[in-house]
Amino acid sequence: AQSVSQHNHHVILSEAASLELGCNYSYGGTVNLFWYVQYPGQHLQLLLKYFSGDPLVKGIKGFEAEFIKSKFSFNLRKPSVQWSDTAEYFCAVISLNNNDMRFGAGTRLTVKP
Amino acid sequence: NAGVTQTPKFRVLKTGQSMTLLCAQDMNHEYMYWYRQDPGMGLRLIHYSVGEGTTAKGEVPDGYNVSRLKKQNFLLGLESAAPSQTSVYFCASTSSWFEQFFGPGTRLTVL
Image (cartoon, rainbow over all chains, first blue to last red; front, side):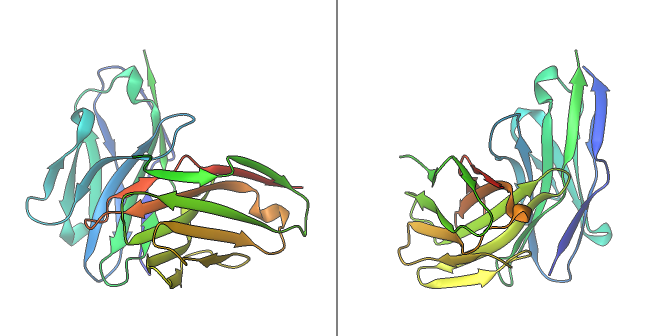
């Protein structure tokens, strides 16, 4: 089965700083890739997804992610973070072979005003 | 259109007790999933279903059973609860593009 690694457990940034969260996965087959966000006390919401085509995908709230197939990576970026981006971010991979979905351990982002 | 709902929202069990968590979706999705979320471990897949009458094991299936008798419902059962099953449980259903829609979660404590 596939697995997902998120490199940073906790990231602390000041407002207007740039953000990059790392995500690597291991799986030899065809996958779809996702980033989800979980605001405090809420359930997960989809930020963006990659299925095929342009490896640079744009999501909600100014987030984007780049799929680099050769590196099995799907890093999340935002040029300028806001205090309201404080949340936990999860990378996820679904195998198109068996529909098995796996999440990374998550990265907690704290944005200081 | 309620999306994905979960009942109950909270539950406290004693070790050895059993319970069933209910997940319901009104989006006509084929695929449904049960996860548990623990601090520092993200979401871990317990079981999932790709259609009515079918289920499959995920990453951490031991101690849990599931049933999908109706397309809109996915039940997660704990036959004999253990403290290690204290967690927040999330159900999700998936559109044809595998975008998962999550329920609000069930916080379970096993004493």
